[in-house]
Each structure stands twice: as C-alpha cells, then as structure tokens.
Amino acid sequence: MDDFALQLAAFNAQIEQELQDGRLSFPTVLELSMRIKQLADDPNSSLKDIANAVRAEPVLSAKTLRMANTVQINPYPGQISTVNDAVVRVGLAALRCLAYAVAAEQLTRDHRSGRMRLIAAGLWLHSVDVGCWAYALAAQLKIANPDSALLAGLMRTIGQFYLLAKAADYPALERDMNRFAEFVATWNAPMSSAILETFSLPEHILDALDDTELYGDVWPPSDLSDVLFVAALAAETPNPFDTMLGVTRRPELLEACTGGLDRAQLDALIDAARATKQEMLAAVCN
Image 1 (cartoon, one colour):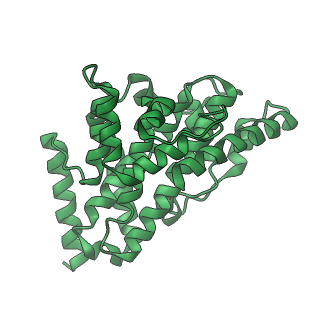
Image 2: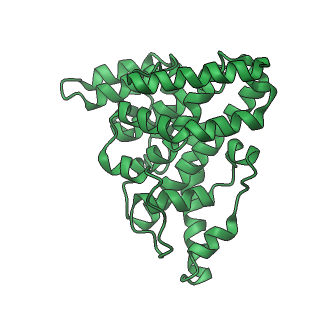
C-alpha cells in the first residue's frame, strides 16, 4: 500500500473508534465555542462570566463588538464600545453563532498543508455564506428565529470541518484531494450527527439539520429546514468538497423550487434578504 492508502486506512480506523466510543477529540480552537455555549446554557452563569470568556479571545471580542454595532442588531444611535454591552446587545443566541464562526475560521489556519488550508478556507466561506442567507431569509419570511437559522446554516458543514481538522495528522491525504473528498462524503453524516449531539443543540435545529427531510417544493418555505435548503441554493460561494465531487452550484434548482411564485416577488425577496445577508456577512467575516 502507498502512503495515501495507509494513512487513509488509519484515519478511517480512528474515526470509527471515536464514533464507537462516543468520545470525540475536538480541536483546541473549538473548545472556546463549547465553553461559550456551556456558559450561555448555565443558569448560574453571570453576564460577567460570559463577557470574560469572550474577552479571552481577541478575535471573538472584536467581532462581537462589530456585530453589536450593525444596523440589524443596533438600529439606535450611539456606538457600543464595551464587550459587556456588546454581549447584552448581541444576545446569547447570536453569540453562540459568532463563537462557532470564529472557531471554524481559526480551524482554516490549523493545517500544515497549504492545499488543506485552501479547502478549509473555502469551506468556511461557504458555511458563512449559507448561514447569513439563512439568517436573512428567516428574518424576511418570519418563519424561524434568525439567530437559530444563522447557527444552523453555519453548522451544516461541521462534520466536514472536523474531518478536515483531523486530516492535519495525515499529510499524505493531500496527494489525492478527490479521493479525500470521497472519504469526507462517506463520513460526513455520521460525524455531523455525533458532533451535533455533543453540542446539545435545541431539537428544532437538529431537526432542521436532518437531511432526510427534503424541501417540499412549496413556496414560501414553511420551517427552518426549508430555509436552510433555500439558503444553500442561494449561497454564491461553493462548498469545495461538492466541487471536487463534481456537484456544481445549481441556481436553476432554486428557480424550480419557487416556480409557483411570481418572479418579481421572488426577486424582491432575494434583494431584501441580500441586504440583510451582506450586513451579517460583514459582521461575521471582517
């Protein structure tokens, strides 16, 4: 066996063992995201505890302040300039989203291989694109909580992120990225399920992330699952794993799903959602 085959077999065995034992080994950068979630869910945690955790990560602090001052979050005059005030303004649900986005962004740099970093960066951009579209569509259609939609959109690719992070220990895998993409496609669903269970997300988000329920071709979307489906089609940044597997962006599928809607109405909705999406995208990415 060549090095690629040997390392792929070892990686496969590691993933099987982790799933069998129910003990996932999260990359260090995801620990902050888990910590923020635990504090937000703990009724005994104070605002000061949460703000202190945010301040421990400079990138998260800066992005929390930036999000708190977006028009979507803070339509009132006057800049928010302290982390404590920003945490209050943003709210715990949005803070969970931002903590995960920062952790995922840092994962994109946690690779020895330039090719793997490039794939991870593309995956992060795609995830943020989908998440921000989901936020915007939920806000426009008023059928789901926008913060829940943002988090669900961000976490649609969490299994792929985890596998990418673990692949840093198997450098030979970069020699055949298409075969590695097939490996990721095989393990993505079970790994995503295990990770989402560890994160203890609310049931309605877990249901929305269950790909067994497909969009029913009825407009407008009726729940969070539908919003995620449409957001993934609206996203302009491709998932690099889809690209490697020959799955290209299909805007015609979005048009097919909205066939019962007047085109002018659809365009107006997309334009309104795009403005909100760009605002959130700037807060998460910059």
